[in-house]
Length: 467
Image 1 (spheres, rainbow, N blue to C red):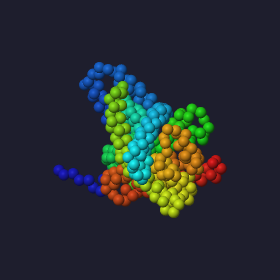
Image 2 (tube, rainbow, N blue to C red; image 1 turned 120 degrees about the vertical axis):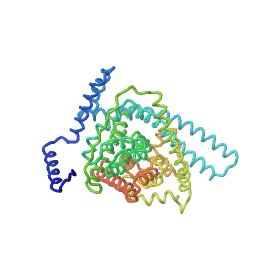
Image 3 (cartoon, rainbow, N blue to C red; image 1 turned 135 degrees about the vertical axis):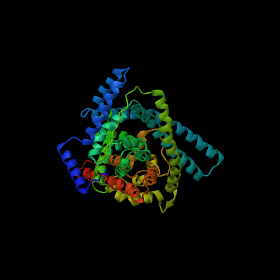
Image 4 (cartoon, helix red, strand yellow; image 1 turned 90 degrees about the horizontal axis):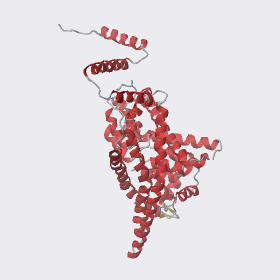
């Protein structure tokens, strides 16, 4: 006998469902999943025996602390701060040694060019443009990446990163996103393009789009050097505190938290406007804790992440260094093309606490965020060549000579954190969304947010006379 459901029956079922939701503050789906797991656990206990019950109890005790409603976030921030502290403290010496080595090699290359009688323009393009651009990227990026990525990988290998996603799940659900968005965000800390691709794990198209559009607000490996460098050079002195490495690490942690807060805010705004809908649920099975495999994890991290990212940075930095050198050495009137463009940007840049050279560096640095600072330095150099790298004090002096204050450094960090994605990420978004509209929005939305935030900060600081 065939059964049929009348329209009235469907309405009564909806009414019962609404009544159940109103009478139960706890999510029905969570209750069902919890009952399923409890029943599964009962069956498993009856038909299996454990040889190491202490290990299971130990994992449960650790989870009770690391995923605690009250202790989970403070522990997460402390661990993040320790990672940044080790990265900043450990990167200075090898960066200086690499810079010295590249400076020595540049002298030898210059001697070779002079010995063969090469024209000045060829030496400028190849040595002062291409070589210095690449050497700057390696000197500044390689040491922090070689420390940061293995540390991050060790946390992942120990089973802690899934606990971070578990802690953040509640926030993303309240923001209208999906709990898995926290996992894609964690992937974005390494590379936003990889974070975009990882959004495929989110089944709902609406929530997947939210995750794609907001992944840019967590700093990728190309922006870590900018945040760490400017924090070390300017922000420490601005707050007038000792223990400079600790203060620099705390400021970088603050930037990360601001990026996460912006991710949640934009997710909430999108879920209330362009991408309305009800958040779906997901179940995350936490892996067991285990001692990290140091040797294999570090080698794989250096090979898969550090060297991969460095290779990508070099490939993009080399032509960008040449183009920037050429623009800095083609004169129109008494100024270079680079200076003319920077002057044109200057009034708008001043309003948001930056200068024309900084905006131009972000524009030319579209292929990869790693090359923004090198391009900026090249733009500041009147000769069109990059400065020597053997003294970070000289780098700070160069910035100060061009009118930098702690506000300039702060706003450049904010602009770097919030502005549009790099070229590779934009291309990835276009491929994943297959939509020109969403791709354009993924560029214009963070750019507008970056401009507004920098404008508000700059005008507030100037109004109160803090600079």
